[in-house]
Amino acid sequence: MALNKRELFLKRRLRVRNKLRKISDGRPRLSVHRSSKNISVQVIDDVKGVTLAAASSLEKDLGVVGKNNVEAAAKIGAAIAERAKKAGVEEVIFDRGGFLFHGKIKALADAAREGGLKF
Image (cartoon, rainbow, N blue to C red; front, top):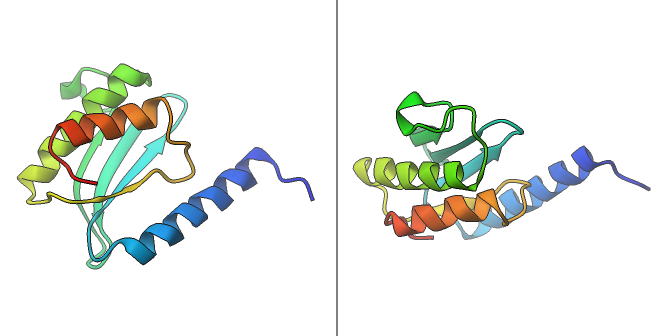
């Protein structure tokens, strides 16, 4: 049974999310979404069902509007780390979704770690 790219992505996303649910231990989830033109990230408290902090390449104050490259991902990672610390979040679980931990996703994660988030 051959699966197309979208079906493989959805399978991978569910697999990652289910593994994270088992080991989360009540920590908020740092969820990443990447499209062809933008990248966005949220810190989500799954127990309460609320978003604690968010950052996106659509925000004009970050200076990366319309860019979806490694440098933009690094700026967004630094911004989410700052906003999460302001919201009182120190430790998170990194949810890469169905995206591979490579390139933009890795740059975002590294910048968030340098900004002080622990995962």
